Image (cartoon, rainbow, N blue to C red):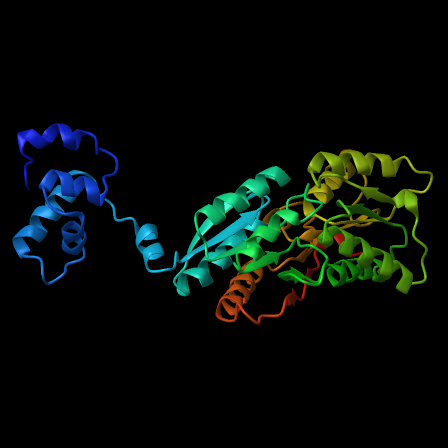
Length: 352
């Protein structure tokens, strides 16, 4: 291995983390262009010089800046993704689907979390634009009520694809599940089991996924000739276990409690199950349960929970495929929405 000259040791000490081509050039007394050609194996650089460059590069922990090189070629090969969070199973499964298709297409993925905060979502957009990504895939934060911060993406002619949570407007592209149909299927299943007082744990209605699930719940009741009862509908700001527990306790205080629960998420339904177990109420004989998301824990509860699968990995695949289509036809690509079909997994919690 090459030992750096003593006169250069002090210089080398500065680069114990990451050195640049300019740093290598200073130490070796060569031009940056010579260093670059040596690192890339150009034939016009002697083997002796290449060896000197690579040995010093190794000493200084030099790593090529692929992003800078890509930008010099006019492409970053970076795809930006913004998710509300990485809790649970759904968003990680989407990211797996995104990375699988993106990597096959030659893209690296840069992932940001908004943590359900619209200001962080705005900061994420700025960070991804500064990184010069070639496209942005985003699922809205729970606190996002307007969409002006996405205009700067479109103004720069960068493909923008929403997934799962997206604006209910006609001029954006996105990939969604048919949440209305998924909710309709779950509630219809409960009705076919003989349930007639079906309560609903609803999510924030300004988000498309929860408003569509609520509409599916109402339309299923209507299809069976049943009126909706406001007392049976609980609108939860956050679909958390504690919220489900509290809503279940309140429902049990009604003169005529529900005989089933349909939740817009699995986690509050799991909270309801805890309360029912604690009070000795049988599931599904006394109160049947069905949720939405098909989280892995739904097969581990007693009884196992009926749930609607959101097809997260396929959603990730479709989002990247839509981005690639937009990238190829950026000048004349009409906004397009991909709608995935839901899958209802019927388990013991709803089978009477």
